[in-house]
Length: 165
Length: 85
Image 1 (cartoon, rainbow over the protein chains, first blue to last red):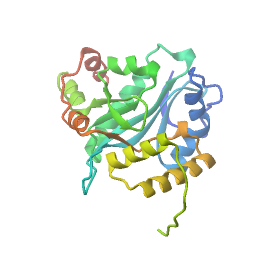
Image 2: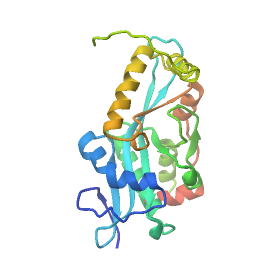
Image 3: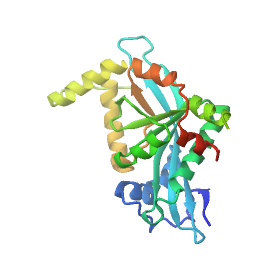
Image 4: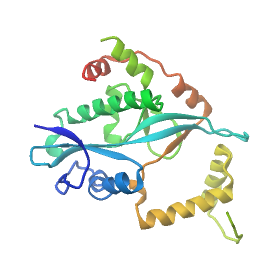
């Protein structure tokens, strides 16, 4: 039986292996300090009965900024929810855990929209995950900076999907 | 913030990127260099680059408007996913 919890010291992370060393190391070394020391991202984990992490998602707020030339006030900003990391252990892939974490993120985005403002979900998509996000209607963003493929799902689209139920 | 000036040399690519970023965002170059160095030293101590969570992304005006006005109908897979929300 799996359940989702906010990452804590009690969760066993040492054996987590999603096949991507950066995502593995992020969970083992940096996720907790990002969350509890720097407050720059919160990680939620799916755990098994023995408290082993089998999947995780790291969420953060993000601003989508307009870059303009020679304006007195160069920015306009849009608030969004960022899926900064999402990974599933190799032993548990293709079992719908990534989909469950995406549902979890959508719920958080709806809550954020209600409470502090959110126009949608941005994801920092790794090359191998682009198809997964495209399947659920995320679109590629042409970001000037930083480098790396960002994708976006609008809250308006999510709301339309919820209304059509 | 108290500042001092000193002479240094950049590679043409770094100079080009610095000019482009400064022009695109309107942020002054000395502020950018100062921030970049600050970030570099902080991340060396604390978090390697690939583990940083970016607090913002920059897009051009057209892309900004496209994102702001994105209002399409969800596809079938998303609709099915949203049944669980």
